[in-house]
Amino acid sequence: MTTFLIEDVPGFTPQIGRLVGMMKYVRTTTMQAVRGMTKEQLDHVQDAQSNSIGSLLAHVAAVEAAYQVTTFGRRELNDEENAKWGAALDLGEAARREIKGRPLEHYTRLLEEVRARTLSEFAKRNDDWLYEQSPWGPGVANNYFMWFHVFEDELSHRGQIRWLRKRITA
Image (cartoon, rainbow, N blue to C red; front, side, top):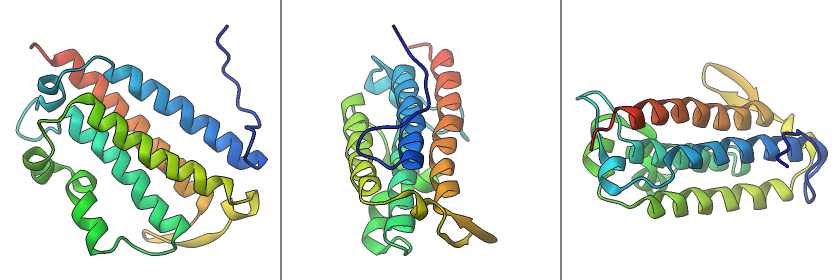
């Protein structure tokens, strides 16, 4: 039987556990959307303005890694992190040029490594941490909103992935 419940998750405080549960569901559906894809399919670019599915998967990992730095480290990405994640964060031309030729396992491993760090860090924190505020964009946000934004971004790109996959003819 499949269950769809937002509830406590062992190893996490109640609110963080609920957040983890939502993030796990989103990741499961993202991985279902790309199951079995070839390198060629992952590299497909619909038009001159599109991003490939591989780039979108790298972007999902990059956004999560960036929010780890922002919320766990209370800083911005350094030069080394920008070099590693920049093309994936920005997408567009740099991603079309740099993010290609990799099998699905590459992106899966990347997503798993980033998520493992997120879960490890979440386990060290309590629900009060979720409500800590810091400057964000043109205003202020709490950690809860920032992590909601991480999986909101993934949901949006999962929709793009599904749309692109339906249009791949090869």
